[in-house]
Image 1 (cartoon, rainbow, N blue to C red):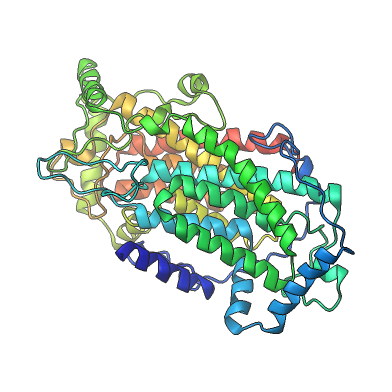
Image 2 (tube, rainbow, N blue to C red; image 1 turned 180 degrees about the vertical axis):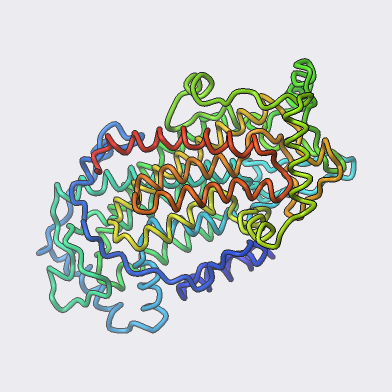
Length: 519
């Protein structure tokens, strides 16, 4: 009941145009965020020709021809819009304004809300073991999922990639059928959104919505009622706005769901289901590290908690294959735990934490992105959303840009977790108990820094999308990286090599952007 009540409250707030986040979610305040209605400088009518991610062709899934705008059935659908508009309320106008900011933007927000809601690790059992969330029984304790950073990065990537392919398919059929928008067919219909010159069938909002619903249900199976509720709200907003008739929405939603099914199939076979590993793997990672003559990472929790998703490095990436990752992107070994460099870097962290300034503490907390937040990948999604909203992108370009960002961030997580568990390096506070942290100690190995790797990838992609802010993004990534040193949980090598690895991953996404047809 507690969970149902929370989701109900979330729905009540977002209907009024606010984005709700858990009160523990750090210094970014997303309440009452207002975004301009989407009104693209370039409508990107040719987006149906852009290169999809999983679809073999833009028309891989059929979209039936629409009924004529002169048909009796279409007139009935026009009258449905008029009936909504004749009795429109203040709350309904707010609903239109909320969804009018863009389908990709709002469904990304919903994903972030759910990530923050579920980003809480389970408490130990009475016998000292730890339970694991089960996708087969998502409502049992601990509820599925524990939306930790790697899980969240993967969720954002599948959402954005499916949205993009859905847009490519939807825009292809828009040009094929070229059905006029309802406000063009009937001048008595009000337009509560900026007028679009795009054909209205199938609805671009609906293809994004249809794809988003299926991915969200896959990632958060215990929240299906809430997800369906948001979808109905989205469709209602489009009708009230006079932007689409019912058949525009139905066709778009079905097409989006068909596209999403390909991503669901991929997700079920991408090896993420085995990422938690087992006791045999956990023991082997430790023994392999000892065999190399190094000090292994050991959980500092009591009782010891298994490392977070130690096999996530084997998850199938979007932008490169596993051989490329191992041979080209995997970083070289960190300083040996017996070396003078390692001792010097450990002492550096002790001195930083011992003499921490107020500004350093602020930076550490600003980028902490810990429990009950939308995680470091979500933080970069938030940054991207705010900046993209000022760029007047089309819905298709929003989808393409978010897909490039989130595929890079997911793949950065794969690279990072591969390195973490290949080297199994201890945290600073493990080797020097004088080192204390106020931001929480992550329960997985140190090298390389996840924040740094995620941030390096995100900054590289965002700098490609908005070149005028490239240096700003690079500076933000550097600050996010060094924040982990201020927090006392990473060595300098973790952070600097993490940024470099993230930059490499981001370049794969940029290279894809150069050939996807959207430039």
